Length: 130
Image 1 (cartoon, helix red, strand yellow):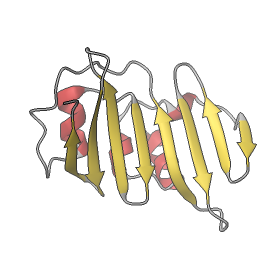
Image 2: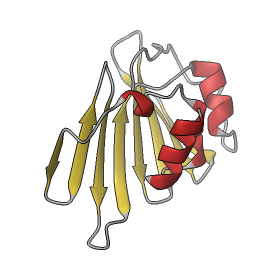
Image 3: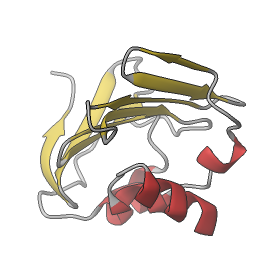
Image 4: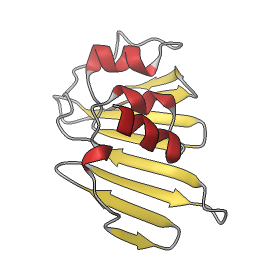
């Protein structure tokens, strides 16, 4: 967890990334770089990070292994923390970080996409299929 925390801090990722097992620590050197981005992948994990002209991490996308399939997000409420969401629904399949916003997404048992949006560290949006 310490390595993940140091990676998340170094890469400009929000604190909510600290609640996952350390898939980042299993990733080796950058697999490829293109333009202003870098890509890593490992056993079921992948991370893509874009950098601005100053070399600061901007957009980050991670695909995580062993995510839980969800049936609904009805127990998620605005104001909950990322840790509370992960405790209720397990590790998301994908994590997107854009500036201060973070989105966790899961594939549902029905094959549809479910997501929770965070503004900094708390839930502000819950999206379920209609």
